[in-house]
Length: 56
Image (tube, rainbow, N blue to C red; front, top):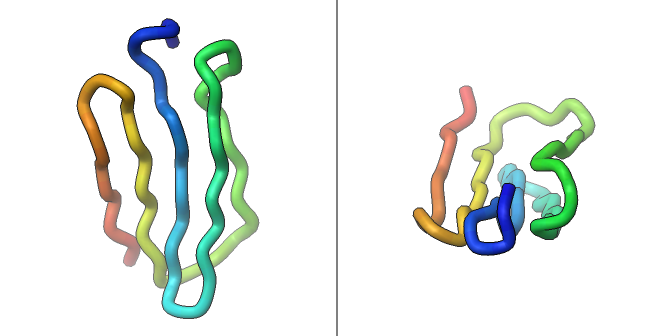
């Protein structure tokens, strides 16, 4: 990741909870979430915008 192009945050939203992790350009684009089911994963790129990965 560079200071101009990086993942700003990653969030996991389920029907009863939300987990939000802020990331910074200096750190690696790695996150760990506890095992949760039935939610959606969102991540925001500073250059390309918001992405959603639908859960199963």
